[in-house]
Image (cartoon, rainbow, N blue to C red; front, top):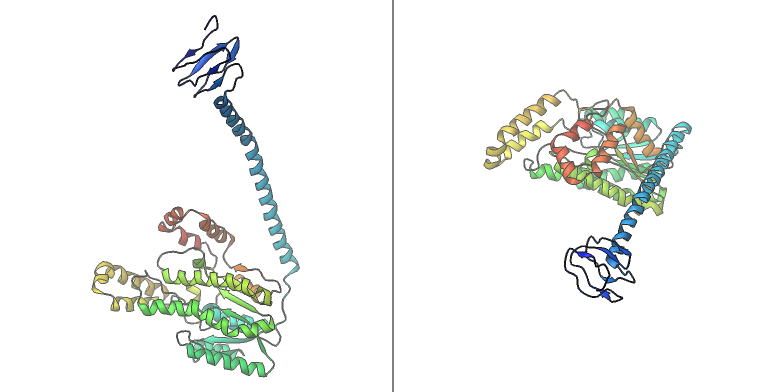
Length: 407
């Protein structure tokens, strides 16, 4: 090798120096050749010396340089996305403020019929009275047309008709009344699918009849009524308003069947809105928030739990009998004072419905939940499933809903 300084190889080296190919170092090489500084290889080097074809070392240096550049560029990109998001949120807020300042342009309700289902109590009853005050010719459907709510609605000048979604033949009563109104130059322009049932109990406890009734009323009923009215709604370029729930955003325990129906309502609403957009029919979703003590939707839950106990199998009673009886007693005490007809005392909810029913350019969704609840539900939907399961198991969902002002 002459007088040339041969680097000390920490591994095994072979080959010649003067212009000949330098072998791959199995270990780490350092030193100089003909005065040239040879870098220390952290891995394995190969190539020639007098051309310095040290591809592995150069590749590592390129990767290091690339990572250094990305470390400078990525924060810039993050800042740009953050600024873009801030601008977008600002524009949305400004648009809302402007619309609240100038007010909503509303359709003319004179001579137009609005069908509202589920008016025996709660939201439907109060909405029927409000819609009548807003100038609509209201047709309110009731399961018990001879009940207290139906009697009060008729006294207020509202048309009532019997409609029980567990009995499909009763739909003919609604269609006959709408035909009579059409003969009097009053055509149906909108429908609010409000009817709903909730049985609050684990799915295993519920009877088959309870499961079927929730599906028939909450989901199938809305689809059946909407399909029946679509020809008239399409002709008049009218409005379909669907009523969902926070349970249609985040599913939780003890409302298994109810959540399934509300998720179905949300999906049906989105698909129908896109399907009917070319026809001029607008489809809007309204989400009330946490109203069990104001709507009477759980007023009969204690009786339903008693029925579950009576029809439960011996194995179910052995495993859940005590819990079922305790739950029945809790619901009986909580809802025994809830009357059939209630005043919601919720002007914001009714305003959401008014916008959904009457705005010339309605939003796709109106939520009556406070801002904190809406943001929390949105965050829940973005969380990994395991995180969301953890929070729901620790009652965070109910804690968030309890923040609703209409609790």
